[in-house]
Length: 408
Ligand code: GCO
Ligand code: MG
Image (cartoon, rainbow, N blue to C red; front, side, top):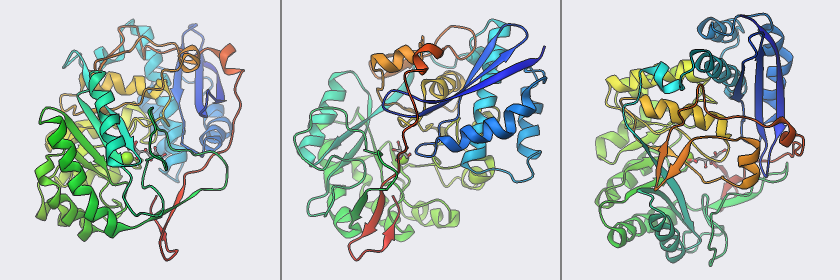
């Protein structure tokens, strides 16, 4: 069996997705997602210029050797661009494997460990009252878990992932449009004074059954993060995400020494080597890697297995940056992983997105039910894809009030 060709598409409804379709001489094709938020043309070029020319003629069933060929063989290893590109190929090869076997991917991993996987939604508000309304809307829809982000009174701009003005009644997605980044102003002291009380009010209003998550988005120093994690303990968070940038991994010890609040980290990691020490030293509770940026199903399965030995559960990244293809790969891993925790999930189910990526995965009452179709269980409509083209975007940048550049 041989790979006969591969095509890359960039674009999508309101969001650039990078999609690869790998064709074989058996008439079966596989799909992969290489979307790297706001840098989408780069993994597309890595695929087109370097990886695809080396794929043609290879046996698609040898997904392990192909992964090693692209990872070890490149000499310069890792990084989000290369790993998103390798990850997309790996997903597509697993998709082909499942279709050849006539089985949904979770069966190839070891079968189902659960019927449905709990997902969490993003609730946001320019102020606490709006945030409460947003949480209530998700609870009414049956969600069992929500991530809560709220505007901080007196902060010059609203804060991470929250609308600037009150009264919003729908899902809020950060505006990444334009090549020139927007600027947010951040005030750590105001955040640290306000947010613990807000989290406690949310807990009091919604009771103990709701899983409440909060994303600090890398904005605290390790000592501040330790103090914050300790102070929010009464709110009994399901997790506190990215309390401090995880580049300095030893710094995570400080949080552990001061608090039992569960810590979730990893959405910017690209390899096992970015997270093995955090896992082995049991400094985190949830590993947040994405199947895309972490290089595909092949390495992520290894990360999940290592995590399982150290009481670390999964909480794969599922921001709107991921197409339904990599989300499908995660749905299959979530159905299997014995140490599954939760899945981030944003409702992007617009008719346009569903038309581009027809899928049989079902989200109901805050639970994801994996498709029984062979392979990934998601398709890609090339005719629909012709409607879209690439539009450049950028993550906002963050500055402190005196102008110092900070972490988005
Ligand atoms: C999350 C993430 C995202 C990122 C975004 C960056 O937890 O969902 O922090 O919201 O900000 O994906 O591209
Ligand atoms: Mg995050």
